[in-house]
Image 1: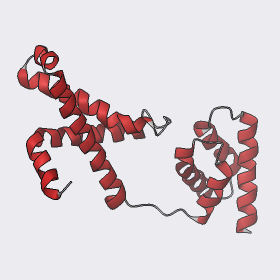
Image 2 (image 1 turned 90 degrees about the vertical axis):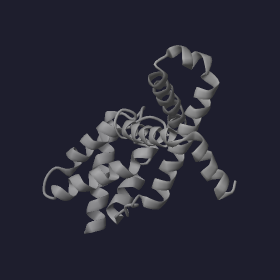
Image 3 (image 1 turned 30 degrees about the vertical axis):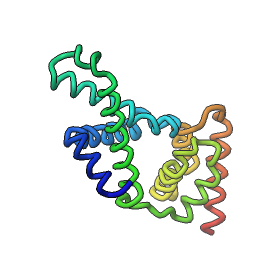
Image 4 (image 1 turned 45 degrees about the vertical axis):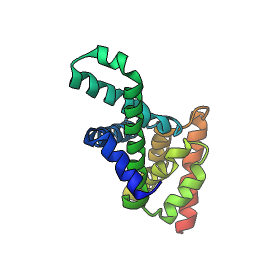
Length: 181
C-alpha cells in the first residue's frame, strides 16, 4: 500500500475509528498489566479486535440510538470494529518499537532471570528477576532467601512445588553471594 492509500483508508473510516482505537489500545494495556497479567501472550493478539468490535458496536448503538441498527448493519459494524482493532494493534506496535524505553538488565538480574527460567511464566521472568534483585539489594544483611521465596511464590508457574521455590530461593542467594564475593 502506498502512503496515499493508507491516508485514504483513515479518511474513509473517520476520526471516530481513531478515537476508539486509542480507547481499545489503552483498555488492552490496562488489562495486560492488571487482570490478565498471567495470561498467555497469544490471547493479547486477539483482544484489540474483540474490544475494537465491542467498542464500535456500543458507539454505533449510542450514535443511532438503536440496537436494531446493529442487527441490520452487522457487517458494517464488524468491518469498522475490525478496523478499530487493526489501528489499535498498529498503535501499540509503533509505541513498543519506537517510543518505549527498553530497560537494560543488570548482571544480577540476568543471573536471576537465568536461574528462575522455567519456574515462573516466560513473559514475567524479567519482571520477577528485577523484583528479586531489588528485594535483595534493599535488604543486604537480612533474610534474602525468604523474600526471594515470597516473590517466587507469588509468581510461580503451575506445577512448581513450594519445596522447589525454597530451594531455588536459596540457590539464587548462594549464587549471588559467590558472584559478588
